[in-house]
Length: 348
DNA sequence: AAAATATCCAACCGCTAAAAC
DNA sequence: GGTTTTAGCGGTTGGATATTT
Image (cartoon, rainbow, N blue to C red; front, side, top):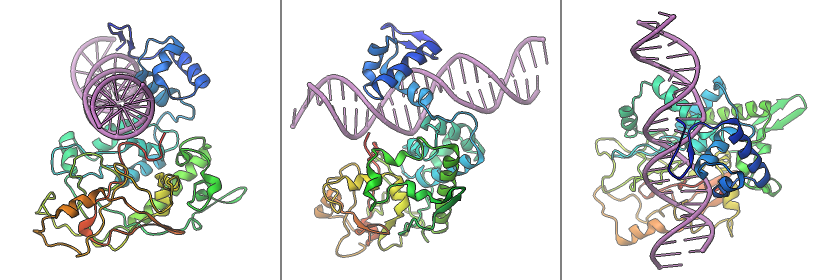
């Protein structure tokens, strides 16, 4: 595998000396500016290779070795919640946010998670690659979000009661929003006990969520075939969805669990906006189509120019102490949510 | 014991979006 | 406002190792 191209850039496995140089460099200059790393270290490696080696191997607190049962369990749940959320009627591959999932598995990298899933889980479920694509056309369960409180998520430890949620960043707790990328605290700098507890906490949360899913399944379609996110729901009057399926959506306001919201990073992110209620412009990060005044349109309804342009209307987030509510989702037809762009809205 | 096959996982590739110019 | 550069992502590849025949 080892080689060097015509530009003298080394490829293949890293040796200990290279690792040491890279580690020293990052410790001295910090993460980022990967293009400067080869210059700073004298390594004959491209910036991509340096970055990847650091993120997947050299970074502190990386958990190596086999996945524990808890981790596998959580991974499956998170995959169900966050992965394969895009349903496309084209042959576009499904979009799984491995980094997002890995972020909730303390010490695990996106590469780890991806490898694990692709080699173990996919096989276990009998899914070949062809089947993986097929799966994207199946319906997806949507967890019915609802307001929650953190208070009932208390974990007892030897030193007294401590809520895992206390370690998170509640919308109303400015003191805990100081740390950037704070939603990653579960994956970084946790003791193994804390890590275990956070896994348990996530399992509980997802268990509850699973019990509380939508009465009806809805298809998830990203009409552009990209920028898929946590959910991309589109009840499309023009027939982008498979007409043979029975698509229904029954919901008034769509609410996202406060914890999920927070852990996915939108709490701090929304908070960082100029006004707490106005998070526009959201463009590729978060969009919603305002509901039409006329309610659900007939099957053969052709959207007007105004309705089409409404796709780009800024999206207002209404917050309350118990959770976050998406006020525009009263009309199923109007749903067009794309919670994630290619980049994590937490920023980096 | 050796060859064949399966599994694991580190590393690379191609692409996209954001940032910088 | 357009172009280039940079960072980051998921998908894929292929070498190393383990297991089976």
